[in-house]
Length: 112
Length: 115
Image 1 (cartoon, each protein chain N blue to C red):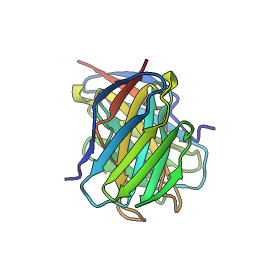
Image 2 (cartoon, rainbow over the protein chains, first blue to last red):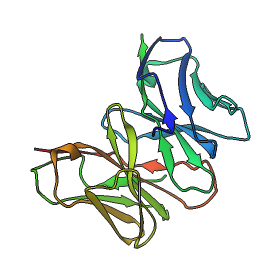
Image 3 (cartoon, chains in turn blue, yellow):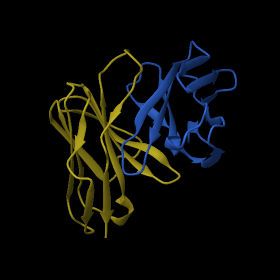
Image 4 (cartoon, rainbow over the protein chains, first blue to last red):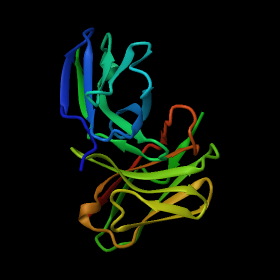
């Protein structure tokens, strides 16, 4: 049972435009959400996170939005740059849990 | 700067071999994790450890075991490697408890091929 879903396996965006990556979850006990970025042959690196008590968190070009009623979060990258081409994973933490549950990933390609 | 290192970047083993994947972190983290990454399946948790000699099964522990004899080192063992264990293996660590962003720090990964 996939508790964290990224329904788009891939996404292509023109350089300079906005990239929007989506993530849906089913477990209402998730209280913290993270986005990771992964280049080929490297480990994932942390990008940005959001607590369930917030609906938006911003860090430079990256903004994460959380809609708890819809159990949906999204990552916005503005403007998109070629170096943003990577696989993006969303992850969620259950209350009191030390583990993270990861989504299946979305491969983002930025077209110059 | 947190550093998580993994003993090999690439490994080729034969079916039936015993395989050891080693992970070392230098930030005195209590929690350590082993994941595998497969296309279309994302990162799936194999085992994690929240202290020395402590371990818990993750979502896909079958065919694997782990060892944590020292706080900084967490080993993943494939008792008898099979072709369906060909994958990218990722180790991660973080402090225990509700602090910060719950970020886990990942090593560079080991690409294991079982032939």
